[in-house]
Length: 364
Image (tube, rainbow, N blue to C red; front, side, top):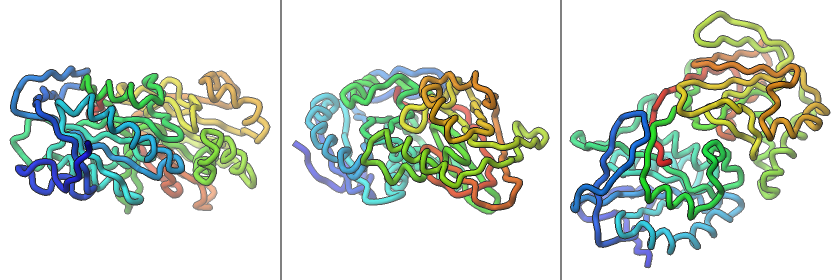
């Protein structure tokens, strides 16, 4: 049975109230043993007095409403599998940026973990909720001995981030990961521009054609992963490759001619399964940058299979390098070169991207 409350228990007042969560209660308790170590951490039940507070952030409208329907079906299993050890708090988002607000509130109130339920869009908002005004959000209890981890139950259209770890789009498998409670610290990317606040990403940021394709793809979500191919074909209409100025690792500016797309990977996949940055690893402390130059629309069609299986690095006019920071500017001055991260449109160049090593803990 799901009981609806505006707080978890009396002792924590209005905890997580921004999401108006419901709570599943249980009899037993467990206390996690957390560490700031970057390595994988296995959490064991070590105290009869503390139960884990897990906040599940759900976009019920995700994947054309499929996320909300599948979440309702999943709740009984979630309760039976985790309810004996955890306070389970369900928070349904009501619109853009709401998942960020829920996440920040949960962290400040000391939640053990915030779980994104849905696709990469929800995950992206939850990750951004771990930061505020350029700094990590922290538990307001200064005596707390644990940090808030993030987790993922993939139920969305793309779920590209999950592919890097070999995770299936299987919510029951995801719940088993959450139940085991194994954690590791992973890197996060930060995107900045003079005069604007920072923006964070966990998967892939990309520039020019691919970013424009993602922008158009958002209008074709009803076609599932095919929406990314449709978006790319639409993006090629009126597209022109552009010369870009690029600076990596605070070095000298270099000009790259006729850039079709530039992808900065913290993880490997984007666009519904394209293995665009095949050497990226969110535990490495670095990005993989892949640059496609002088591609025509027919190159995209003929080489699409290479983009999906990650063998495109051997193609002419494709370069790859490992970086810690990268700055990208356009030369033409048109102000029309798109940038996105985790499939979310961020505007246009210029931008600077930096890796934040071991920035947050992830349930893996």
